[in-house]
Length: 216
Length: 216
DNA sequence: GCTATGCTGTGATTAATGTAACGATTGCCG
DNA sequence: CGGCAATCGTTACATTAATCACAGCATAGC
Ligand SMILES: NC(=O)c1ccc[n+]([C@@H]2O[C@H](COP(=O)([O-])OP(=O)(O)OC[C@H]3O[C@@H](n4cnc5c(N)ncnc54)[C@H](O)[C@@H]3O)[C@@H](O)[C@H]2O)c1
Ligand SMILES: NC(=O)c1ccc[n+]([C@@H]2O[C@H](COP(=O)([O-])OP(=O)(O)OC[C@H]3O[C@@H](n4cnc5c(N)ncnc54)[C@H](O)[C@@H]3O)[C@@H](O)[C@H]2O)c1
Image (cartoon, rainbow over all chains, first blue to last red):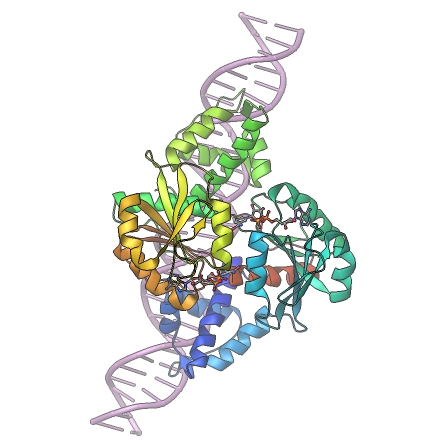
């Protein structure tokens, strides 16, 4: 019932709130949070409403409480584990970035088919051959796959993931994947993103107006 | 007037059409293109209409002509050049990926503030100190900046870009940037994307229905 | 030739998403 | 103690995006 866009914003709010908490801020108004997230105050209030948290007109939202509410809403109670498939240029950067972040959503294993990579350890994640995906998935209870293999291999790898019981895929290969409706796929197509920026940069140069207020 | 979503799909169509052209296919129907792009046929026709190309009811769209039309629409006549700032884990992967792709949209320079990286060459792109950004931008006519520096540095780097006359930014730092309305920013927030996948993977597990048809 | 077929182009319609408006509430300050 | 100022919660509205549905047309087959 809650839309994808709302989930994305909640994830962003949570990170911004974490920074506020670190800075010792106890409470925050919708317009303050809106400003740092680059959205309207009404949008913030709507999103907060969606997770059932309530602020007070005088103090706004209690930072710690709101974080807790977002946690309860977004996180799985027993945590979730992810695996990365394809430890190439991009894959290595992703492991460096995602490993050791939130304990509730951790990267625990990586896979590749290159024998030179198998057996190595990447930021605490052992690299196994891709044939080991299904058994490893079961033993470590992996819920999410991150695909960073060449485009030509992506569909085959996705099939392996689906067969092993994965229900969420973050796909960096520039190929729309074919999966059953029970699997959620998020495609990150960086070529498309770059071309988008190129196009709108051009229209910015010409007319000095932006096509639409930005956020993601 | 043409929306961001439409531009993103056109970029995807172009790549898919290129594959068709390589395979020797001369013409394609909206429903075929729609299937590989994971959108509806009506959507394809609408998008094609937006760039002023016309197909024929009998043959559909001529692949080579449609590619040409998308090129004319998306590409700058004299090409566009991009620079990357921050040659760390992610930056290096991006250079490897983006360098030497389309000549119409090429990565030509990289910047960092680490003296150990300055002077090195990354896939044909010389690495300069970030202080050299403005002069290099002018001499190479760089239109687009890709930001891959730590979050704490991102705003400062964005300011440098804006001051140097950049109108398009692809931002990988997990920070909403503060820029004037004359600059188009596309934020790629991978933490948000991963958390989104985690959330919907969970809801897939529970109820076996997807929240919305997927695409990006 | 003539009809049947299957596609494109596009106005009409529906769905999704975001914004605005405003009553309700809370504490503050005189 | 009672208005004032500010903010939340929520409903109504506006905007944007996607889909439907069908007229119009080109071709193939007979
Ligand atoms: N490098 C980037 O910045 C970047 C940017 C955007 C998209 N991508 C996409 O991400 C993917 C990976 O890019 P990359 O630059 O890391 O490529 P890469 O060639 O450096 O790495 C690919 C890795 O996948 C492994 N691999 C290949 N086939 C496999 C299989 N069937 N099973 C398991 N592992 C397999 C290879 O051994 C290699 O280690 C590609 O689809 C690419 O288009 C990369
Ligand atoms: N690695 C990933 O896969 C990944 C994923 C998502 C987001 N990100 C984001 O991308 C950014 C870069 O990530 P990374 O993993 O490559 O980090 P990194 O630390 O490996 O690289 C950062 C690079 O930026 C350079 N740098 C720092 N300050 C600079 C400045 N002021 N001017 C110019 N160069 C400067 C550093 O010298 C370094 O080379 C971060 O904001 C990170 O949050 C990275």
